[in-house]
Amino acid sequence: MLDGKRILLIIGGGIAAYKSLELARLIRRRNGEVRAILTKAGQEFVTPLSVGGLTHDKVYTDLFDLTAEADMGHIQLSRDADLLVVSPATADLMAKIAQGRADDMASTALLATDKPVLIAPAMNVRMWEHPATQRNLAQLIADGVSVVGPREGSMACGEFGPGRLAEPEDILAAIEQQLGGSGVLAGRRAIVTAGPTHEPIDPVRYIANRSSGKQGYAIAQALAQLGAETHLVSGPTSLADPRGVRVTRVETAREMLAATQACLPADVAVCAAAVADWRADTSTNSKLKKDGTGAVPPLALIENPDILATLSSAGPDRPRLVIGFAAETDDVVAHATAKRQRKGCDWIVANDVSPGTGIMGGDSNTVHLISASGTENWAPMPKAQVATQLAARVADALGAMS
Ligand code: C5P
Image 1 (cartoon, rainbow, N blue to C red):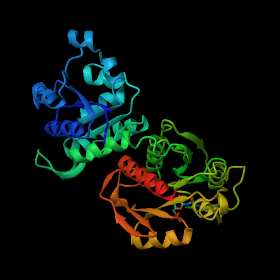
Image 2: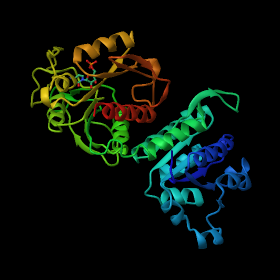
Image 3: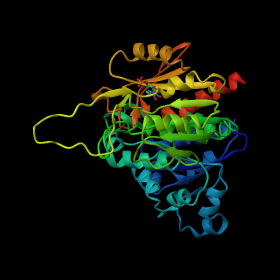
C-alpha cells in the first residue's frame, strides 16, 4: 500500500501515454496521492481532462502558467512529492533530464527536485538502442535515477524489441519498492566489488579485461537506495561514483582483496568485479625493451587471490549473504552451478558473455540466479533493473534471516 505517499507523475509524449492513466488509477487504488504534469507532447496523446479525472487534481502543463505558478510553483510541486515518476519517459525527456535542461514544467520540476526519481522509458527500439539514449541512460543511473522497463515486444511502430513501456502493474511495483521499500536495508552493511583489475607487467603495460563495471555500480546504487550503508570497491572504470555510496578505487586484485576485507563486517557482499585470475609473476619497475634481436620476453603468470572464495570462507567475519557472478561463454548454468559449490558462496548471478550477446560493456543483461534452491532464469532487462531486482532479493533474504 502507498498510504498517503505523494507521487508526482510526469507524462511524456508517447503512444504509451494512455497507460499512465491506468497507472494513476492504480496509485490511487493503493491509497497513494497522485498529481500529474503533462508535457506539451504528452497532451497530443492524452488530455488534461482525462488525466485530471483520474488524479482528482489540477493537471500541470505549462511552466509559464501564471495561475499555476502563483498557487503552486514548479519548485513546490517537486518539494511536495515523495517520488517523481516519469511515464512514459521518451528519448527526449531522458536526454533533457540527463543534461539538466529546464525548459518546460516537467523538466524544471525534475531539475528542481531532491526527491527520488523513477523513469519508465518507452520508445521505438532503434531510439532505445541508439548510443545517445544509452549514454543518457547510463548518466541517469549514475545520477541515482531508478529505471523500470522497457519491456521487449512488438511495438506500435510495427517493430519488435526492447522499447515497450513497462506494464502499469510493474511500474506500480517499482514505485512501491522505491517508497515502501526504501529503508528496508537501513542498518545493513553491503560491500560490492566491480570493474576489472589491472595487473602490471611493467610500469606502462598491464593485463586487463573488458569489464565496464556497469552492473556492479548499478548494484551498489540499488543497495544504497534501499538504505544499506554501501561500500563499493572498484577496479579502474570510467564511471562516476554512484550517489550515496562510499567508493574505494583500486588497481590490482591484491589491492581489491585488501580493500574489501577492510570493509568487513558486512551483511552482504556482492562480488561483481571481473578480477584478473592471474598476474605477472615478475612485474618490473623498468620498462621491458625490445633488444632488436626479435627475442620475446617470457611472461610467467601466477594466480591471484580469489576475493569471492576468501569472503565465503571468512569464518565469523563471513557476510551472511555472499553473492558471486559468473561470466560464461558456454553451458552457462552448469558452469555457474559448479562455481557456486567451488567458491562456497550463497548465490551466483550467471550470464552469457559470448561476443554476440553485447553484455560485456553493454547496458542490458540476461541473468540466471543460482542458489541452493535452484535456478531462476530472469528475462532480458537493463542492468539497472537487474540491480534493482537483485537488491530487492537481498532485502528479502536478509529479512528472512533475522
Ligand atoms: O572464477 P571466476 O573468475 O569465473 O569467478 C567469478 C566470480 O568470482 C565473480 O563473482 C568474481 O567477482 C569473483 N572473483 C574474485 N576474485 C578472483 C576471481 C574471481 O572475487 N580472483
